[in-house]
Length: 84
Image: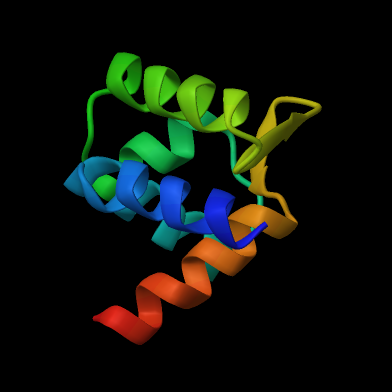
């Protein structure tokens, strides 16, 4: 688990847009990709790609068109807050 956290932390912190997506989902809860794009002013295709990549890593999960942080994603978001 700790190794996954470190690996995912590098994945997220290596890209500012990924960090912003994790932060908005952490603060606002589950959102459709369109809302994430609007809140963070990131182009929708980029948001969709980021969400899919993070979904493959188990950081976010999609449910009825909305994306939310998984337990691993919540742990990452807490760690991001500590480091900022």
